[in-house]
Image 1 (cartoon, rainbow, N blue to C red):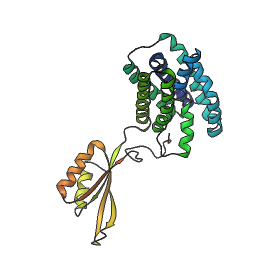
Image 2: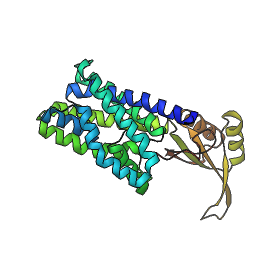
Image 3: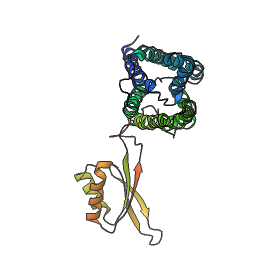
Image 4: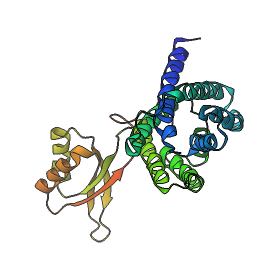
Length: 284
């Protein structure tokens, strides 16, 4: 076994322990069913008295077969390992009980631990099983959809089901918060804080503006050739991607150089290239 593989499984082990801790120390003992296989397992635990970790393992069997068909045995080996670790740790920590009985604190802590664990597992090329595999299959068909968003849609259905079974609206609302917070934090772990502004600047002083952006803000600037449909006059259009903290300074430079300039500012949620994400990073 190579050093890279050993490192991968160490990361998966740590991530699975973190993920399982969020379940057994915060969510499960507070009857918060956060959706996915975990949420279904918590519901079944209350209905059958079979341990939550055991249900996680049982419910994952058909999903593992789907993953083997779509992604191959190599992918599934690491996922099976993660599922087993998650199940064992979840059952092992069950006697410890809840570290807090405050539902809000349990929601926040459990969400953070689950998102962190899932994110690390995904980055290692595996999944925690369950809906992770289903989401990964859906990503093959709908690559433009973010992982956290897909989780949120499917988990919302299970949270609604839990509300009817537990007959506790408060717990269901807290579980809904778990789904929302986990999806947001998961996107943050997977994609990072690379949100930025995409700015187009149309001005007769394009060269002066571009020069200041390059020199003062160290921005990457691209000229796009354009021409006015009415005047027919050719113009240099400035296009640049700006990280959010620098966006106001960029706008100030434009206003100072040409208050009559035409500026379009829009959001850019995923950026690849120098200073941002690698072109070769896996789309999770």
